[in-house]
Length: 114
Image 1 (tube, rainbow, N blue to C red):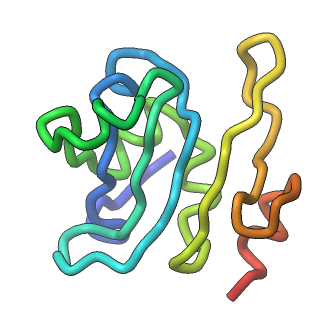
Image 2: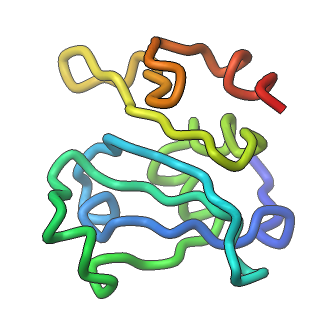
């Protein structure tokens, strides 16, 4: 897949994800920095102490995100305020749980929330 990083902006990602720990939470908020797209990704191992230390995060391009977890680009256009828990079965990602709506949700439903 050809990815133009300029079409996406930067993703704020836990270093644990970069090290191979699966994504547990993703949320999108309006960024005050134009180079960031508002997406934040936390791993299964990230606790409050970990996420409160900004040195535990890096900014990644869309190309790098695609290599780690292509489904992130599938939900890229979700609106600000999207707050998702990633669901797994036997270590395989099987879907999302919308923490705002308190229910399982499909990618199509996530994208139609505009």
